[in-house]
Length: 459
Image (cartoon, rainbow, N blue to C red; front, side, top):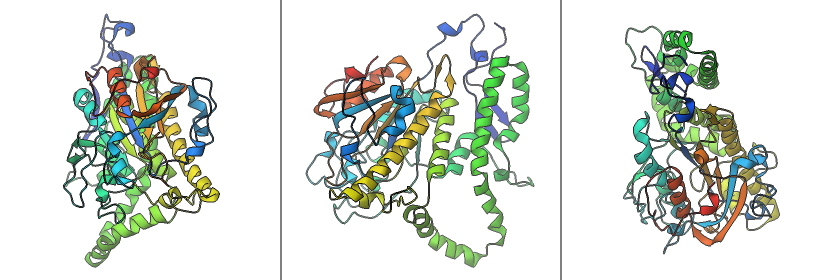
């Protein structure tokens, strides 16, 4: 083993830019073997799907390890052995007087407490969300204690059917009981926040958005590559290529800024007035295929975990009661919220199921990405816990019982996936959070209304 090594906090740096590095063999101190190095960190992610599921095609028929994936869960086929299917979990905090509709079952999915019914901005979800509790314990060693991503901007106004402010449907991550964490919904902004710490120079001829963040750190990267062993060189090259790949996919968005000099003040005024309506209408209600946008965001989440920029992240596929039009999926013609109120009619129920399957496919994409990336002697998926959840079992009845919950990854060896588990009816969802806290060595005797741990998920 070479006596030369680098700090695990080493970053690639350039003019106005910095990039965290993945774990490299050169980070192992001289005289210390790979086997007595500290354990690789465990990452936690929660992916939220709005509007519930078609309950008749979600749960596999057999329980235990000998099960066949249901029709909706077929996208998990390649990683079946890396996922736990958890049945009969319930968010009891979503059952309280006046808790009708979607919003009372979204904001508290990771807090476990009833929310305060309000039509204004005096929000209160009873406690901090589980992801933020993890961030408090595990986020001090990373550039970002947690990251929140999504696809739809914050909703405002009042739900006429329930009397809840729609703000409750736009956040699942809460730093305090009254402060939701804002989420990033644009891939370019998410990417730049993580990998481009750029301070514009007025004398600079070329605009920052036209530059690759990799070009800015190239000199430092080349110097480091010459000192690394062959295996680390290959690993670093693969990592940098992944960053460049994401950059290329979103580069075209930057070109639109070239129009700025030709936009008159009068035009700007019109654009400002129409911006929200145009953006939301075109993407959400016109059936625009958002698959690539979602996967760009998921790739950025993977890079954030890979580089150890953060160990905690959430992703909202849509806000509560999302009306996104899914006509880009063959056989689907309606909007998500509309189809979730299927009235048990076969046609709408099958369209509803196809939307569920679509979201499961995006979840599977994320897990497969994590599984493809080495992390020490394991993979990123081995050292992660990735939860997939909706606040409703069925959108038609708004039922919060037997929630559709998946848990991917092995939690650094603490979880034993590859099973379809049946728990006692109305087992608190918070029992899962208590169990995950144990896997991450977070001292906790209880969480919200938890009654114990889900011992069946442990390795």
